[in-house]
Image (cartoon, rainbow, N blue to C red; front, top):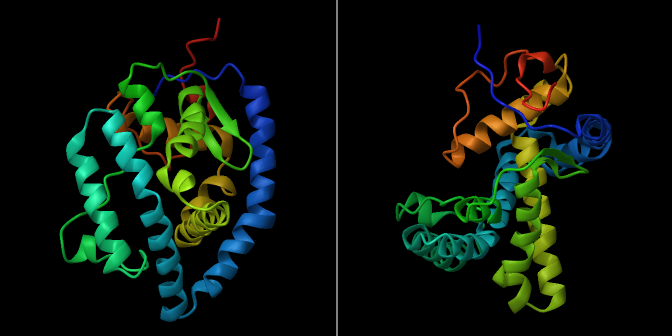
Length: 234
């Protein structure tokens, strides 16, 4: 018998409606766009093009991660991400390539403003599913806004340049959707209850990343909503 994790989901009815909308958007818009971006993934050159887009979008996210690490009082990952950005922007042709990771041993140190809020002691809040953006918590939803506000590129670049950066980062997310298409489809389209499954996967991984606990369970096992403990149930 699997362990369960505690879920704060007082807005489940509304979240399920948003989830149904997101599934439709993924099926009819995001999945076809990501497939077209990868050219169907039939040739190495097409797969390579997707990797270039993903690399460039990931590189453009690094300045914001540097700021977040500093706000968290963690200078070491901030320094690593700063040098990774510098190396990949120059030697990596604007971030299309990843010499920082392959040649200099500087992997990306992932973080975001949601983690910054967690470090500052902000509670997780209720589980939410946001239109298009997908699963979040109250804290992480606020963190998505914070990431836009603190990203240096959006403040330093001309508005047209900032818009191009945003567009490339969106294309990078579409590339990641293409890369992990089978896994995403297995959760969204093939699960008996894709809402409960996605909620479980998100909370488990997010709490693990933030060292906030959560049971170690198989995220791809078929899990019904009743298998998850809801502390707000009477």
